Each structure stands twice: as structure tokens, then as C-alpha cells.
Length: 390
Image (cartoon, rainbow, N blue to C red; front, top):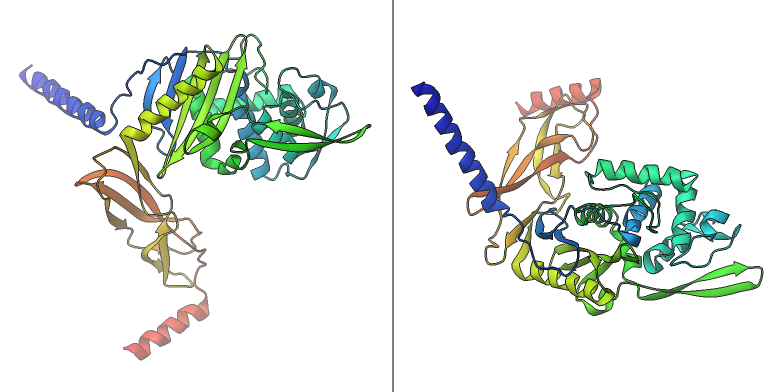
């Protein structure tokens, strides 16, 4: 009995120490009095939550839905499934969308680029559905893709019913889930900023009446009024009220502020700015060395070359409270060697970062070339070389 009490007490101390250490590294995000049903602000590179308020409440997201639509469009482009120059034939279903639109007509043809630009800048519902159908064959097929992606990202509060965000029963998500999909979009496809930072633009419609220019106006006024604003998506309906996923970057730190259910457009923007201001005022990001930085060599066993360069696989980001942003130190732990054949990207070791003697992050070290197994002539050449050297 005495031994069991001793073990339980020891475990309790260990567990308490673990919790305290974790709390010191990532303190629980405080709640902030945001004038909206739900809100969150997340640092984009680390995914750390800086502020939250009812962040997991399931609510209608209006056109902020299109963050997922945009993510899947960019994914399809990245996979080579579609190209920006591809022409999309507009269906009657897509042309019949209400709300924000660019007034597409059935059988009209528009490029993927024009439609994507219209979705991001002008929140065009008809363009959103046309692209959804082009990628998946139907909007409902695209919705399946949206929900599958949401599940893969850990968006457990989400159920999508359409690609545009128009009000319909069961179409819900949360501020936390919007932050997750926004983070995925801006980290993997930063080219979205090429469009999300445009205030006004236009496209040309070719109709039976001839060519007509159609203006695109950005619904996110933060890109004109907030320093460092980069996007991302607004939304409003009678059920959702006023929503936004606002992104901004200053001094290597990127944030995502999500507001859901604000009572009016001005409040939506004011609350997003307030949360972004809090993050930039209180936190900073320390960066490890860039991806691809060569950190030494590793011995290759039985390879056509005897050693290979080793480089950093991923640049790490460390979120710290301002005033505690100390220089990063690092050490390298390398494997004894790699056996050929070995492919580019094979792990050769790790780089471990420290701040004030405490580990704060690590990244793999990888080889930077494919290495074939040594042939007979390689082996004979080394034998002769070693003989002469001796």
C-alpha cells in the first residue's frame, strides 16, 4: 500500500510538472469581449490561439464558406487537375445563384482565372458554383469534397451543404474551424493574396450583346484601412449576420482573426482589427533558419558518391510573448550514415532549436539529391585511390 501511494504521488508530481511546463509554453488563450456571437484569432505559422470567444459554437458562415471553396480550387490547380487558362461552361444552376454574383449566363464560357478572381474579390456565388461543377462534376459532388477536406483538417464543428454559403439548414461551421481552413489556404497557397489584396478590378463578359466590362469590388475594407492586411473573406446573410476571416502580416508574423455573427458590417471589421491589434502588440515570431539551408554533409555507404549535403527540411516558427524574444540557438544531431540507394528528402538527422537553454522546436535534416548504389567502376576507383593514398 505504501509503495502504491508513493508511485501515485510521484505520478501526480510528474503530471503536474508536465501541465505547468506546457502552460508556460502555450498559455490558454484569454477570452476577449468581442461584440459578436463567436470569434478567434490564431497565429498562422504555429496555429497557436491568441484569443477566443465561443470559438466552437456551430453557426452559419455565409460567404466565409468560400475559404474552403478557394482551398479546393487552388488544390485542383496545384494537382494539375485544372489550369487557370481552362474555359468553364456555365450551367443554368450556376447562373441561377442569387446574392453576390457577376451575372453569368447559361452556356457562357469563362476562364478559371476570371471565375477565381470573381470568387475571391467579389464573393461571386455564380462563379463559385461554376468552378465547383467544373472540378467535381456537380456542386453536390464538390460539397462531398469540402466535407472530406474539413474532416481531414480536424474541422469537427463543420457541415457544408453548398459551395457559396447561401443560407440553408444544416450549413454550419465555427470560428475555430474557419481559422483552420484559412490557415491551410494561406500557408499552402499564398498566391491567394494576389487577388485577396485587390480593392477594385474588372473582368470582361462576352455575351450576345458583345463584350461588356464588369467591375469587381472587394468586400473586405480592411485591405485599405489596416496595416499589413492580406485578405481573406467576408460574408453576410440574414441568418449568419456579418462574418469575416481577416488575415494580416507584420514582421514575419501572420494572424487570422475570425468574427462570426457581428450585428453590422462596421462592428465586424472593428472587432477583427481589435483582435489583430492584440496579437501584434503582445506576440512575435522567431524563425529558424530557412528551408533548404545546408547544414553539413553525411557519409553515404555503398553509394556512387561518398557523402551528400544535408539541408533543413522545414523552417520552424516559434511564437513568443513580446519582450521574451531571445536569440535562437541550435544543435545538430546527425545519423552515422545513410546506405545507398537513397532518395532526395531522406532523413539524415535533426536540427534542434533552443531559447535560453530550453528546447523550443526541431526540424528534420534531409539529403538534397538522389544517390544511386555504387557500381563496379566506382568501387574499383575508390580502391585504387585509397591504395595510392596509403
